[in-house]
Image (cartoon, rainbow, N blue to C red; front, top):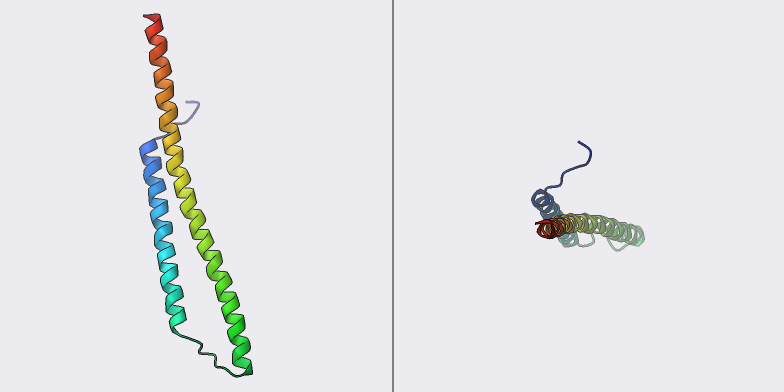
Length: 107
């Protein structure tokens, strides 16, 4: 067989599952961030502690932002899969409509 088959129902289901995983991950990330903030500033207020605190908060914010953006991109990919399923269904319906119109002209 030359070509491929697409099942829009399965494609949409997979897209929804990817979106759910991304949303769950984002929720866990937010929970983790809140938990980490709950520890306060355990490095202290002296000179060395202040330097450690600045480094930690800068790096932690960057890492959490990167992970959050990655999770959002994964969710976006899930949305793209559901859109792809919609597009395949629409293309199939259009093709079916054209075939039915041609059949009507030939009858």
